Length: 347
Image 1 (cartoon, helix red, strand yellow):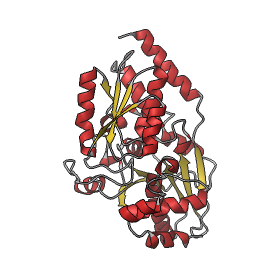
Image 2 (cartoon, one colour; image 1 turned 90 degrees about the vertical axis):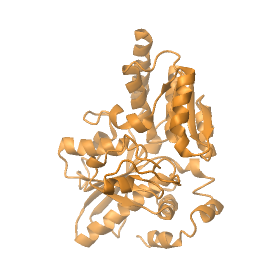
Image 3 (tube, one colour; image 1 turned 180 degrees about the vertical axis):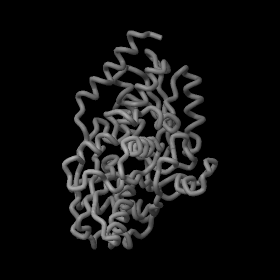
C-alpha cells in the first residue's frame, strides 16, 4: 500500500470536513401541539446536498484505513442516487474513478449530479440487480465496491463526536426540552438509525428511536417478525429509503418502535413542508415528518410535553419530475387529499 498517498487522502477528507459547517437545526412552530416542539435537522446543507454526505465521508475513511482504497482504485457503489452523488464528490477530491450502479428509473437530476462530480452511471433494470452488478464491476476493474448496505453501520463512529447523533444533542442543549422524547428516522441502509440508536444507549438518554418505513419495504416486517430473509417484489417509491431486502446494516435491536407511512402521506407532507419552510424537500423527509407529526398527536393525547427531532434528508429540487409533478403523483400515488387536508388543518 502507498502509505504516503493514503495519508494525504485522509488529510484531504479531514480538510474538507473542516471547511464544512455543521448542519442547521430548524424548529417548526405548530400551535396545535402546545408544549411539543418539532425540530428538523437540515442535512440538505451539506456540500453534496444530503444526509449521505456523512456516510460517504465515513465509507471513504473506512476503506482507506482498511487498505481497500489505494491510489487509482476505481470506486463502485450500489445507490439510488444520493449516496452516489456524495461518493462521486469524494472520489473526485481524491482523484479516483467512480461508477454508480443504480436502477434505470433513478431521478434524472441525481444522475446529472453524479456526472457533474465526474462519476459514471451503470444502469440495471431492477433494484435487486444492483448488488451483483456492483460486485462484478469491482472484480472486472480491480476496484473497490463500497457496499453502503453492508458497511454503513460499522463505518460510522457512533460513540465519538462528529456523528449526527452527537450533533443533534449538542444543538438541543439550550432548547426548552433538550433531551428529545423521540428521534424519528427513516431507513435506507439502516446505518443512520444504527448510529442514533447506539448513541442514545451509550449516552443513557431517555429518548426513543422511532424508525418510519415507506410502502414496498421489508424493514417494518423484519422488525416485527425478526426475520432477516424477507424479500419484497417491488421497490420503494420514496427514493433513498425502504429496501426490497433486509440490508446487513439494518439493526432492529437498537430501534424502539417502527411506523409504516403510506407513500401518499409522505408526498402530501412534502408539499405541506414547502408552505412551512418556503422551499422543497425530498420524499424521505416527508416520511420522517409525517411520522413525527403522528407522535406529536400521541403526546398531545397523553398530555405530555417535550421535543421530537427528525431529519431533512435532501432537497426537493432533485424530484421536480416526480413528487412535485402532478401527473406523476396522480399516476403513481393517486389522491393525496385525505392526507393533505389533515396537514392543512394544522395551525
